[in-house]
Length: 53
Image 1 (cartoon, rainbow, N blue to C red):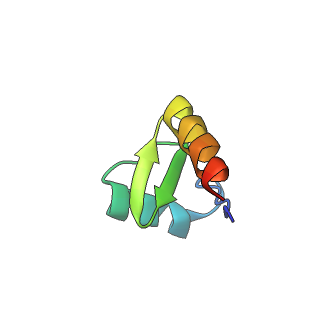
Image 2 (image 1 turned 45 degrees about the horizontal axis):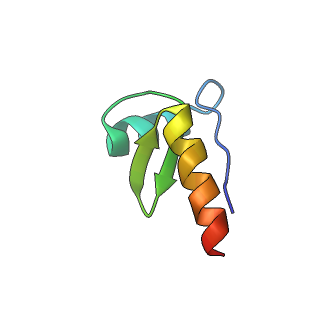
Image 3 (image 1 turned 90 degrees about the vertical axis):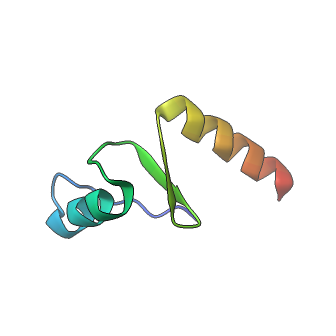
């Protein structure tokens, strides 16, 4: 499951993103608490993860 958070309308989500990732950059996918940035990296990870399940 992937939960979505909108940092434009949710200041707490924006603060969490900065606190954990060190920057306010989207898109960002957290994988076991580690941020993954850049659309292509996220797409590649999602493709690989779906193959494993």
